[in-house]
Length: 258
Length: 224
Image (cartoon, rainbow over all chains, first blue to last red; front, side, top):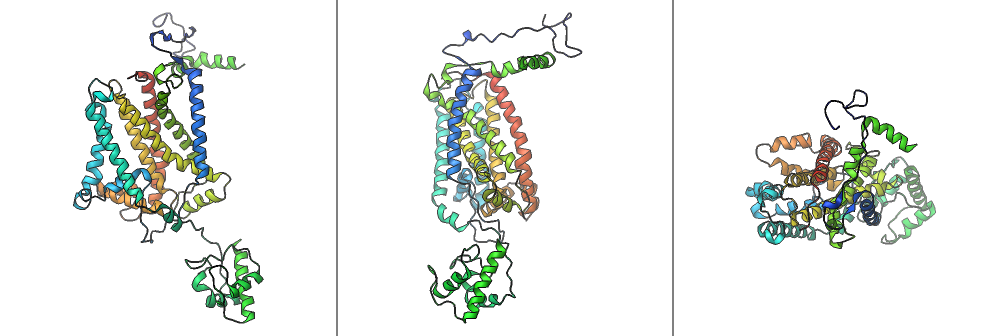
């Protein structure tokens, strides 16, 4: 008894107290070699998913996700770029017919038309045939849109020098260093080193940071006099006592930064 | 013992029909890559969902460290990236997953489009799918700001300027997103965080549920 009087329920619920055993559906009405979803096909999906996951994790391990320096709203020279899947929209706005006085065509007209048509595709392409050859207009419009997106993305991405961009915007952790300006070595540092190594030893385009270096005071004194790598010898001009103070100052800043 | 627990629950809740509805259906030959290798194109939808699950899980773990305020957002991401054990991998999964999910979505959309699988009676499910695509793009746009590095900041500024140029509602739209008429700052970050973590995922889950219920209800489209 499926409904009506005489049905018994569990408590005051609407769940039938009479257990009817559940028979799996008869698949004979479907043509071809069908397969049960559970558990046969799910196991295969699981395998496909595992292979996909291995590939995905390999990508993740091989390419650590990028992080640029902390946002600096006063940076006027930064050239903004969206994530790659928005590049085609970004590139579109560079065309004359989609910018300036015609900006609405660029931000609403063309994308609205394209995505609106995508949303309403079943109603625009409402013939009975499903094969691509039976609906040449829909298929050719999609191919055209696809080619435009690929072309715009390529145009946008190929104009960017990604490596130098990443190099120029490396993240620099904010230093916790405290510069003791009363240290006798500070004045020496100011006179001989600051113009290249910066006011907080943070380095510059001309010279590396002096924080996090693993040299002893003697080695630092030696480098100050004799140079190292791109740093020429003879930049330090002072007495031996000042040299000693300078080396101690740099070591003390390094210790405070740890 | 397990059977007894199951029976005890089943007597009260009658779960068997529910779970039979989900699991007990047959997979036709034409979508089974074991029979026709070209049927691997039917995997794209499932793989999209798989990446979405990766995004949800990795995102949940990211929020354990991420701090949505302009002083600490970048620092917390930097800390996660450099100091936390496996932090780089979890953030990497979320970062690359955001790109991979767009790729898989595109492939899935193209598969459905070129097979004409959106035709009657599946028009509604196609539209739900396109809305899912839009939600995913929204998640990409809002998530891009959260690390609060230079590329995030300036890209969002451009995005908001574009939103402002929409006729009639442009200014309101920008204030709604940025929290201020002129400043892209603290308010913008918290709003984008809320949209990225609460608003859009809520819409995403609802649309995904509809998407899946409709698939189970209508079945997969037949062979071409």
